[in-house]
Length: 179
Image (cartoon, rainbow, N blue to C red; front, side, top):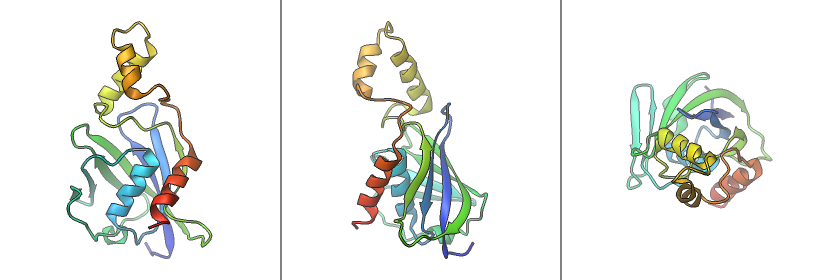
């Protein structure tokens, strides 16, 4: 793919139904660490844990101590290709990232940016897909013995259906444009 455009990726959190997903636009010249940051901001993760990208038989693991200069263009990714992004090796949050398109760059817009998405990201340290889904079941059952504890832990305002595109893009603009 040429690098005169912008990559359009769809990021889907695996093993959660209904699907939690985001669509982001990012410059091909960005590093994998920039891509990680854009994913974190778009999904609503808090960047507390280790992560990796897996593509084309290669694994790129990051522990926060070593900065990588690997750029998205270095992957030589093509439309329709998928990257596996794993966040928090303990909880094992796996994300399928599909390159949907290379679109024209718009000078007036900032990148990266989120263009669409659905549903709220699970809270950090919620036990991976199984643990998160169990917590949602408990929240729906006010008679469950752990209901109050889970309600307090997840936060009184937690809504699994919540997604605010403007809020995500404000966070992205603050993180990327001001640096």
